[in-house]
Image (cartoon, rainbow, N blue to C red; front, side):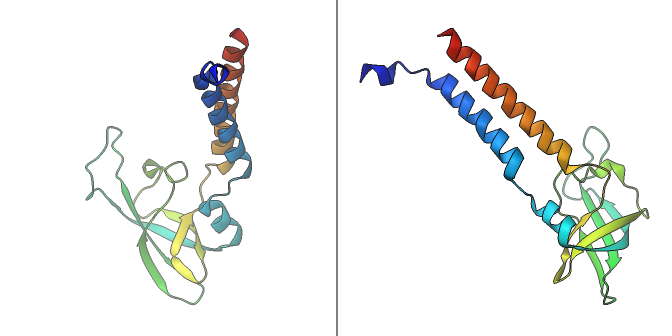
Length: 144
């Protein structure tokens, strides 16, 4: 029983967090990635940049992006973008700017914008953070 109490739980927990971050970076697929692979592409415009929910942040970026586009069956969609921050940095858009929209055919209100930002970068960052946590954990365990 004393051996259980002597285990370095903080180092073990740190290592488990690292393994979890590595695992998630390797196997998790986001809804945006799925939509990019299966959605329908069309051209749209940035219809409005609105700061009604919040004021400008310290970088002068508005927090709400409204996009207008037409579907393949000529239905007009004007909706607010619901996207991951890492994929839709609002400061990169201007009102009236043309954008490539990828929408779900059965639910056009579910859409993303095609950006130059990569899902791979976010995965790589998560992988390296996990690797660093794991290495620190192993190092601390080796010191004991």
